[in-house]
Amino acid sequence: MTVVVGLGLNPFSPRVPAALEEAARSLGVRTRVLDLPTLCAEVSTDGTAEVRDRHGVVEVSHLAPALLYWQEA
Image: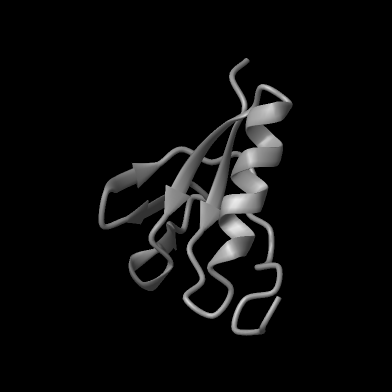
């Protein structure tokens, strides 16, 4: 199983994604930068979900609430 951590770009805390990306890299975890203004998730009535941003579909197994979003780090 390949683990890829999605990192959202927050214009109010620009250093946070870079620090998280560096930490993930040091642990050997791949990352994908997410474009938060265009990120959306659609859940159908059968429970299937599709998550995407302006770069395309994002494969996810879990969604977590944003950490420090809209706040200074």
